[in-house]
Image (cartoon, rainbow, N blue to C red; front, side):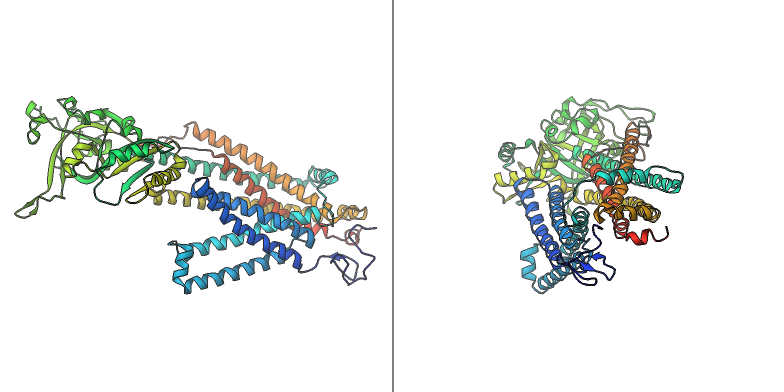
Length: 618
């Protein structure tokens, strides 16, 4: 008796007691639309959406994870729920449930559209439910959620049909693996199929290889850029809505007691112009405390000439500047400087005390032709002092105490540092600062620690910003670039999955007689499906492993520093690489899932082959 070919209790062309349709020839076919399977799919999608939102809020607020990490956890949780809901739908419906998933997605889309139209007509309700984010981002997220529910639900129903389509749950792959291995082995009669199989493995390997290398290099760029930016800027800052921030010392002590805070230092920002020997440059001048700035930034380690502590002791700055004839280290041409007298090193406006010190970047020093000990004038156009023609610009002389090099051209050419007391005096803000710079124990927890600081300071008039908010545009652009590159390169894996699809289709056509014999001997439809799914997954696994080995080897080769870059053109000397384990796991999962989806059509086609049709020409 054939396992899945007939049912003695039902006449041909009717319906069996278990809901299967019988064709006039006696073949059992699943119902075109199964309400029970559709209900499972629909409920799974709704539960996944609600559970995903709850998981994201819990992970973000309760466990203080980053927004990106919370979103990833929510997506994984929702995908697992949809997949688990699709599994029993495939078993009950005894099919792939494509129509059920399409109807479920259509119903969800109609409900979301109705909700969006309601919010559009009720601005107050939209602001209450969505906040200031607007409707457009929510529309995009909802469409992505519906599409993801269809894909993962289909994967779940296909697995349910594969393992339980025959009515009983069968997770064994005993003889199916043996037959799949025999199909993949090279034979003289099927040598062409063997070549196509090797090409399929190489196609998957190339896709995984490219994705691994490109994403690792882009992660390296992001990490290197982030380290350079956060070497100059703090992990977070504490600011005040009011103009005066005189109590910064007490606030700093309170902030240092917050769990996760490793340092705090006050700062004062202002925009000025630096002039020397006819050269003028606009810069951002920052008042710092040299003794504590090393707790929040890497500025002391970036000094390449001079000493940052001379900002607190300007009398220790070398009396004579370092002078060279000809070309300097940066390639600029210098003329011999005149010797400076002792009076040139004193500030008459400060009672004959030493001229205060200033630290400038390497690129700024090159453009202004400055060395340690040189004198530079700082001018601020913002002044409350009035003259006959209007406001009189504020001006003061400083001496170069240190030259720093961060590796970022923008910072080395547009930043200058002076002592906090000198900045308060120059900007006429006695006893006040712009804010406090904060360093945290973990960079990825900066947003959570910033929220703790706000809670400790009881909110208004204080507020915090972490590094992700201060540099949102830059890192969002880098993230978008990585995402786009990943999607584009993923098409290589998509092409590889089509190669697997073509290979399995030709294999089904070649093995028609074998399939008919197996079904005549009692093999179920699910067993025939398993044979070809195993073949496709073996190809995918071999290609993924080979691509992963090639990708990691290429990353190690690049990380060795063989590929050199010109630091005068780029801000780095070698191509950076950072291999992220979760990223590599994601690449492997994508490759295997796409390859698995490519096996479904050939395996279903093979399982539906009637023994008579397979042996007709024999």
